[in-house]
Length: 189
Image (cartoon, rainbow, N blue to C red):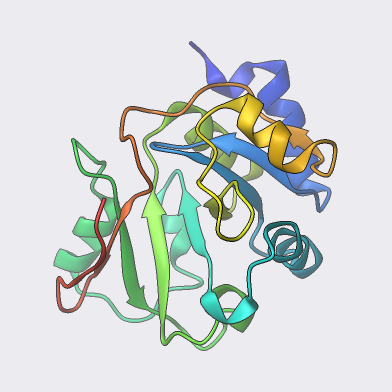
């Protein structure tokens, strides 16, 4: 399926470029996404979820080069880990951040959570926006992450600017989170 040219995906990307918040399926759960550069949209996601800003957020992208404005010094080997498309385990990496990374994204953390997604709908959305996207599970604080479009709508109704097409991948759960400097698993998949 050609996700880049699906009218619904093009519409979702336009909503994001216009400062909106959309729901999009990812590898294991539905996520809420917006352009990392749009502070109002990031704040809106936090409000929709009831998520405190000190917790930080994940950035996803279709191409590792889009992350360079936000990531601090990494070795070639570490960049290769970030770049690697997942096989069975979907990994979000905690990486050093640079001084320009918005604190609204990192929260109280000294590292940034990033993932190069291989899931076709999320990959297409990132490519069409041509920027990293905030991606956080589509649920309100304390509730299970949405795994279907119906669950997204039950949580958020018409509070979102758009719900992208597609379904979640086969990961079955949110991504593993691992520190790229220490290999410590912060959240298991």
